[in-house]
Amino acid sequence: MNDPVTRAVTHIRLVEVNPGKLAALDALAPFYLALCQQYVTLFCTTEPPNKLRDPLYRTPLSERWHRVAIMQAAGIARSWRSNRTTAYQQYQDDLEQYQKQQADGQLSVQAKEPQWREWNVPTPRQPCIQANVNVVKLEESHDSTYDYWLIISTLEKGQPIQVPVKLAAYHRRALTDSKTHKMKKLNSSVQLNQRDGVWWLTLSYDEEVTIQTPPDAPVVGIDVGIANFVTTSTGKHYGSFHKNLRARHKRDRAKRRRKAKLRSCLKKKGVKKLSSTSSRTGQKLIRHTRQEITRAVNQCFTDPEHEGVQFAYEQLSVASMRFKARAQNAYLRASNLGHIPRQILWNSQKRGVKATPVISAYSSQECSVCHYTDRKNRPDQRTFRCQVCGFEAHADYNASVNLSRRIGDRTLCACKDRKVIKAVLMKRHEAWKQQQGMRTIRPAKRRKRGKSSAAASSI
Ligand SMILES: [Zn+2]
Image (tube, rainbow, N blue to C red; front, side):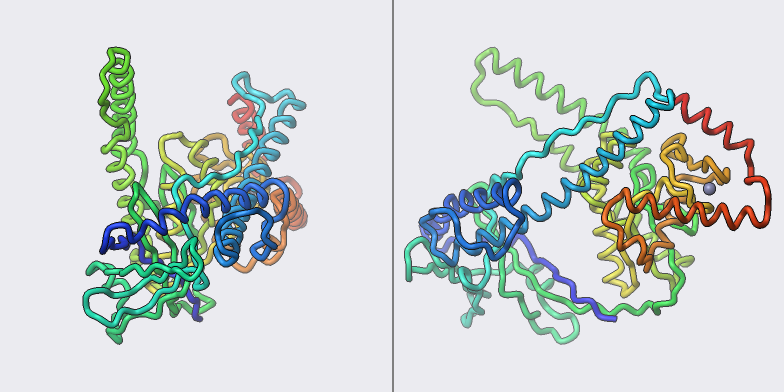
């Protein structure tokens, strides 16, 4: 099975050969950013995102640039809308749960009614241009000084600028095919970013990945979390944010607070030049966390126990990342959690092992034995205890078993939202109950049920 994958080569600095050469790009950027923002707002608030929408606003940019801005804005708005929808469904879910507990008189004293705060329309602050060949052309250079030329059309018609591109050794390595030793075929669209007055180029190429896993290979489910970065349905945990990382994070937060205090104190005394509050140790910590994640995912893939298997993993949305990060502790940034599925994808591609993202909704609340789905099945973050059949396990393990079964689950894939998914799972639970009823008359472990619901309501 072949899957083309788009890979990016980032951080190629645009060389300023003669001063002022990039001035034309600097001049264009604010107009582009402003126009893009207008369409982002339009597509987020008034109209559904449409890449091919007719131009609506006035701009000094050419029609070609105008169309590129519309396309980019539509992409930004589409992902914003989908993330917002997921978050809103999560909120409605939380609210429903809250109201149900309230009606049952099971609400704890500390429980707060979930509030919905409307999302702001995204506002990119630094210029980012996703350009196609109509406005930016990438040409191979024929002399040895540079690798490519970028031909960028500007505000002045018929006056494109030519900017040389020089690759660093590691860029060239990334862009060279390891078998043929030839340069890979680059995609025609490029991305230009401006940060602190410097322009950076991102190139990309498509790669065919050969998956060697046979389709009937046994499936191992992967649950992603903070207490354990990776938990598999084979019952193993890899990596954790707790232990050292957590302590480091706390120290870092305290340090940042002290710095901020010092700043405000100095400011009051009229000191002009202030040190920055952005913490270098914070950056280090993020890097360290990511290294730990990379290591954990690697260990999972190279575990001898996982030879010849395929993986099913949860595709986290931004909303569920936030949710998971909040449920456990606010220390870990959602962006770090998002690093886990990316690493899973990367490992699977690198090794030619099949890994399939699957629907993750309710995977942590569904009982892997009887499908009963309820938040009360989770008396605490670590524990899964089914309210009906009494099945008890590590919560992440229970979730990973559910995920392992969701490959090719067409019924779940066809579900429009979380509500429908929950209904499907509860239907499966009913089917399980009927099947059970044929064999035994009394539901299994009735006693445990009473005990755990009492425990859940006292939280
Ligand atoms: Zn159960």
